Amino acid sequence: MEIIKLTGDDQRLYYLVAHLVTDEKVLKYNLNYPFKTSDSYCWFIAVEEGNTLGFIPVKLQDGKATINNYYIDGDDSKVFSMLLKEVVRELQPDFIIDSITQVRHIPDFEQSGFSILLRWKRYVKMRVFRNEKKRV
Image (cartoon, rainbow, N blue to C red; front, side):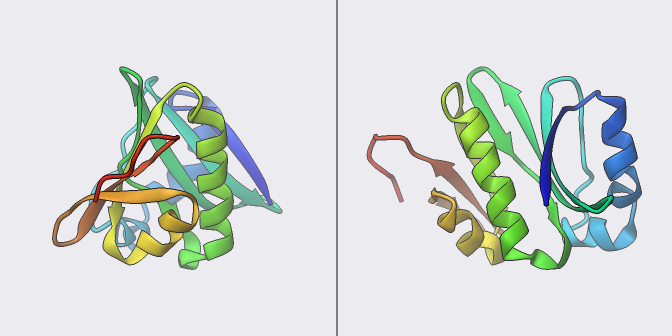
């Protein structure tokens, strides 16, 4: 499996994810929240043998990197882990990394170093902490 990192306006992004972000099954996975992109986004895409296994778009703005939607085919923990570790490895030196995470995916994010900041009904806000104290 390979993790590809692309800017939100890279033409290769459309080749790798357009068929997924318009798929009814994928939109339902994302609780019918549409996927967004622009030049302020960085996309991490898991690819194997020409197939896109999942992706995490991250909005980069004012020192924050925010994951607000994502897709992992079959909720595959290995794909989740590889993508999240790459997001943290690439972005943590320069950004605070937050995620608006579906409740069912809390364990996948926790295994990659995220901690819960806030709870809502269907989502939690999570953050990767460096050396400062965690809030719950």
